[in-house]
Length: 248
Image (cartoon, rainbow, N blue to C red):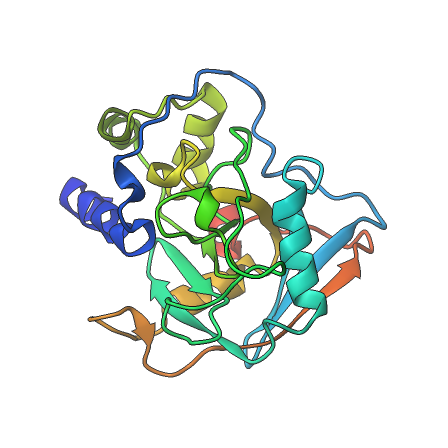
């Protein structure tokens, strides 16, 4: 991504961050990144069924962020996400849904109101990450979620993000962002990353390219979530990345 385009995209996160982007956090530990940990057969996963597009299958990390996963699973089982839209779509960044109002101003947790889903430094905003949108911190998590797309980052761009947001990226995190892309400026404990796409990333990418209204990034033609179901992983082949990415 050219440098001026990169910073333009980075500025777009203000639509997600609210006033929380000034928060500083330094990640120092060199622990393994867990996003691309494969599920075991029989493990509970969630599937987002998108009308006219297909299914997006996601692994969750309840052992790392139990409340975050419990909230999403409970809302899914209760039919909360049925017939909602992806109300905010930003090409080369993310797709966002889970708001009953369809405006980005609504939604609540399964307990009512907001909750703190927490964060885990071993779960980052790489391509395919599932996370809660918030209003400035993880203590304002609710029902809204986003799935990261993002472009590949250069070493220089990662250094610039690191300096601007005071985030230390591990060697493995840098390699993943350079190889597969994502939104590294969202790291540092600012958002609750609690899942990862294991199949259907091509669908996420397709949605990310739909025409949108420039004033609010809302798709001109609504993209509907028919339902979100909780299923058992059947051992089928995993596709972490879009086909175009894996063939490069």
